[in-house]
Image (cartoon, rainbow, N blue to C red):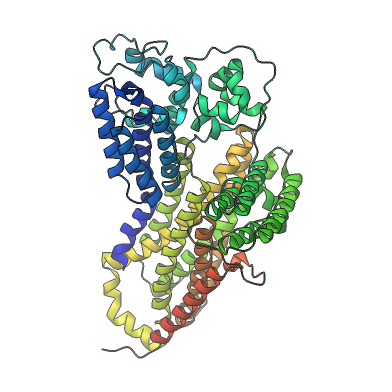
Length: 623
């Protein structure tokens, strides 16, 4: 089993990014086909045989990448091939491509926006160095190296590109390039630099002028400005269709427009829940479930720690109420029951908003939140590591200690690396956060069960003496020690991963002014955790070896029970597992207890497995 743990862990760590890469390529092909189809077909006639052949090739290539997509999306891909062959209008192609792209983005959980607004000054310098030669200094596709290139470099002033290109599409083109053209992939650029350029090229066709009234009919955020082209923005925000100066501002200074119409998480959660309730009333259950999921993952979860710092009971009540609403939707209850759950959710959202909104995230609050996050997450990991180190110290297995220490140190370094990468490149959606946390927790449970079984089998003096005589030599083998290192890595990295995600959200919310306080809270929490670890290790010295194994195995079993509940609940929050609520409010997060049937059944099964393993462990050893 131990030989499989590292490959399994690295698979779980990287599957998300690799899958996203495939999804991004697919979106890139779809965008390119929709944008360039008009160069191949007009009024049902082929105007360029070469371009038409390329469109057919693209449509077929898109269809070959349809694995893991819903049947309805695969059918739309097959329809796309027929549409190209039948030389339908570009409008029909764009409509079908748009439907396919939405499905691909959803299935692959692609981020369609950067984590912060672009640095257009930096983008200007990168454009000058990397893009001017082909696209020209003004983006007209007439650079010194453009002569003779086929197809010609993009002219960002052309109406089709000016209005039909979104930063998200530009991002994919810059990141991936366009095969068969002079547009190479700029894979060396960081995520931030790529987004900077993607926003920058949309400025060329827009001339910014002073705008007195910046208000829109509804809030606009970075997600909309990044994922929508000018036409789509105009459909969603009618004033951007009629007010060219305001549209120019959206492309030349997106942060200024967004700040003037600042969308907040509370409004997003309420608006999205309303969509969920309306969709359910109209009989669209699947759509309703997705809106309800999104309301929690992208509306409530990013600000959950702020609410916890103000009123933990309210935060728990809100989380449970949203889960209840989703359970009603998944259970196909009456529209009236879902509507009541929606009303109750809005009441709690309003209470949370009144408590938190309007108050900037102060340095003190940043300190408290950071301290709470690290202390809470760190204690779980410390208990496991201390249990293992205590046993190793008592048994004199000095060879194993460096592996355990190496495991948790590597986990901390990986956490720091993840923090750096999250700030520089990655944008984790709420669903991705929950999925990774859930999977890592469940893998850790398997390792903990093995460790607990091993410890419990040594609690009797005779068995321990036999183990000492016969097995210590085996512990020197690399594979056995590697198992301890993997366990140490997993239990610490899970907590580090969750901490990084929470702290990233707090850091973005507080800005530069609160970073010192954030660091102070983290540092104090680490000091307290280290102190607790030292005290626990000293206390463990006083225990007889059989008792030490007994108490350690009990501790490990309890942690496996806790992580089972947390892992299942995380996957429920991500939408991977359905939610069916218990008829009573069983919720003790420190024990991993949540009021759902799935978590309760999962923990019951784990409890039975632990009992069976322990009964097996106390049988006489053979040989």
